[in-house]
Length: 285
Image 1 (tube, helix red, strand yellow):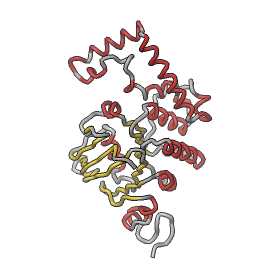
Image 2 (image 1 turned 45 degrees about the vertical axis):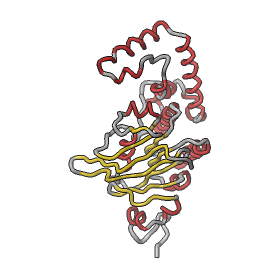
Image 3 (image 1 turned 60 degrees about the horizontal axis):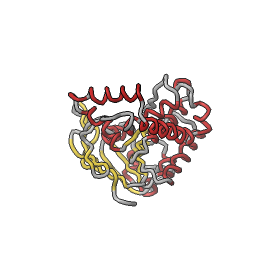
Image 4 (image 1 turned 30 degrees about the vertical axis):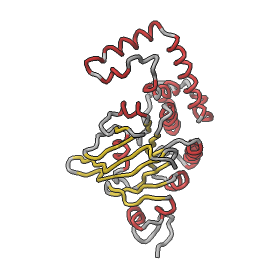
C-alpha cells in the first residue's frame, strides 16, 4: 500500500445531545479497499456523510490527497475527487440510465462549464451561468470534444453492467428494478473517475445472485486499483473484498485490522452477537 489518500482525525458529530460519531480516526491508502461495519446505529453512515460533505463535523479533520475537505460542501468534495452512493438508492427517476450516468460527470466539465470556480462566489455566480448558456447555444470546438468524451465515458460505465443496463440505456430510471437502479447509481459514481469511491450498502435489497454480481464487480474495481470506502451489512462480501475492516459501535471504532483478525476480535463478537458465538456462528470458548 502507498500513503493514505484519505485521513480522518478525531471526527465528532452530535445530534441534539446524542453523539453519533465520537472521536473517529482512520485512514485509507491509495488502491486500498476499507470497509466499515457495525450494528445498526453505530455511526457508519454518519461517518460516510461527514467524509463526503453531506454533513459537517463538529470537531476533527478530514484530508483527501493532502487537502483539507472537512469544511467543504458535497459539491466541492466531489470536485476534489470523492464519489458516493447512498444507503437508500438515489437516481433521477425521469432521466434515462445514460442521463443518470452523465450527471456524475458534472463536476469534471470544463469546456461546457467555463468559469465554474466562480459558481462558489455568491456575487459572481451569474458569470458562469451566462457562460454556460452561451456555450450551450453557440457551441465551441472544445465543447464538442468534451461531448465526445462524455459519450465515451457513459458507454464505458454502462458496459460495466452490460447484461443488466446495456439494453436499458435509454429507459427512464423509474422503469428499472431496484437492483438496476443501484447499478445505475454505482455507474454514475464511477463516471467521475474518483480518487475515492464511497459505497453505502451497495447490495441493500439485492438477492444472493445479484449480490454475487456486485461482489464480482467490486473485485474487478479492486484489481484495477480503485480506492474504495465501503459500508455493508453482508459480512461475507466484506470479508472477501476488503483489505482492512473497521468496526464501529456507539459512534466509536472498537476494532480495526485484516478481515480474519477482526472477525475473531472479542469486542466485535460482543457488538454483533454476544460473547458466546463468533461471526462465523461457531461457538467461542
